[in-house]
Length: 258
Image 1: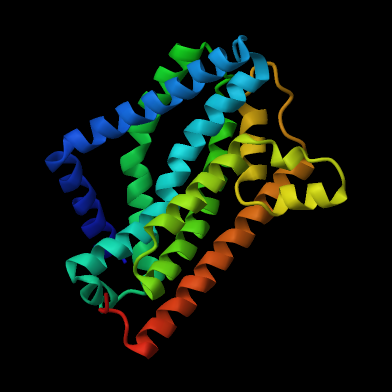
Image 2: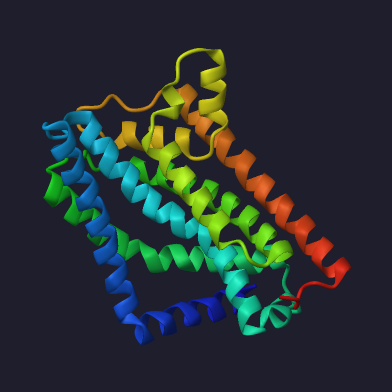
């Protein structure tokens, strides 16, 4: 397992060194999209976004950029390996398929962490949002990433079986933007509460927002437990689905097929 970690770490460093323009361009696009949303909302409503709504939008957008990579990277990785004709070699490695793509997911988050923090600082400077930085916020942030990895494992399972699914991945990622930014976890009624709890990332982002919001009182113990249960549910579902898809693809002999 250590050799797998070292190999993926070296691959990440090589990518960063060889393709710095890709990272810089990604940061510029992330900032430009938020600036367009921020000033566009100001123009349409003739009133600036402020208070808790502003901090919620900044936190939600930042989390979404991380989630896009955490959830989409595994599926894109399988599609790239298929297009390059190297998927079969990856699948014949002495590690389980889930282990390989989970390690890649971890390295992708490490690669994305610094650019996302730089963009977050730029977003705060642009919008004037006030966040109360606490070390405790690392816990819901990690829970959010683990939940996103569960979704990423599901996408990897679909990519392993169907090969081409770029449009589906885009649809899912933009659906996650709605779930993250819209207050799904606060929908009124019993069914609304159940939907808010079961929806991926909604509860985790609510906990993160409550932890980082200035002058906030933090999240309740119930909300923490709901976020943990939701994280376990989606990660286990993704792990099981990719394991089943791996077995089915090997059985059908479609690992190297494109």
